[in-house]
Length: 330
Image 1 (cartoon, rainbow, N blue to C red):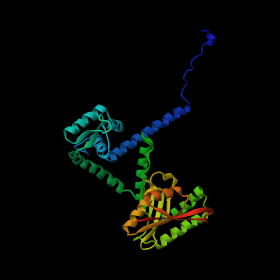
Image 2 (image 1 turned 120 degrees about the vertical axis):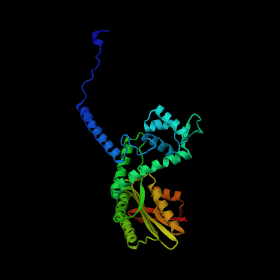
Image 3 (image 1 turned 60 degrees about the horizontal axis):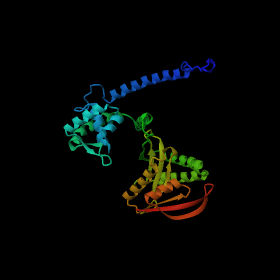
Image 4 (image 1 turned 60 degrees about the vertical axis):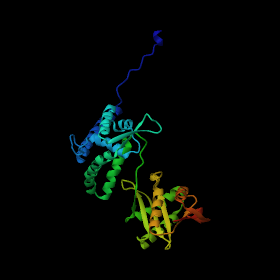
């Protein structure tokens, strides 16, 4: 080949300065993670050689925990999810089987796969290990105030989400009764969210304020309730009120789910809390008023068993809307 036709191969040059800076940053962060690992394992008593989980080792306890708490688990699942050697897992499981702690059965859809379950003896042997974990963790949480417990659990779920290899985990949530400040938050969220998503003017926020003020002024805990949906870090992401309309009829009001929590089942849980409470208090019917444009809320009501009983056009909140009354017989 003529010399002029020869193309010289590019030689790899030095790493860009940005890459070098990232490498230095990552090394510092690795050390920070190692410090945290040492701190946390010491805090919960999982030091090398710890006899906390006798008669099982820490690894055996982890394996038994996975078998006890999963509906379906195979040896391959344990190898993959716990990052353990396949041979080591196989020997451990054979030992558990000889002790009568673990049983295998073929999966219906694939006889080549063996599903692992704890036997009655296995459940009995593992029960003390479960209590050990709870006994270690309870005092760590009890010493913290409520908001800091929420921050701690939220941080743990963030770690699991960022480092997990599966799809992005959905944050869990809890429902709690209202506290001072919650109704003000409910009013503000209704005003801002409905203006942003539906173009409602400030008269809608005024309506939410009237509902909130009346609830706080006349609240009867014997037959009324407010629920706030809260993420583990304490962020409020939903609310609903159930108020007394008559001796036999309760009224569901101001259901709201923050956009950041949509898809988690918050709305469904809030409505179900209203239904359960109403039944407990002896109400015979729950009624609510909404607008046809609120399609997500309407879908929740339909799935909960509410029936549309009345609709009419009205001009409110700067919009021409179709108002709807829905009832649920209990």
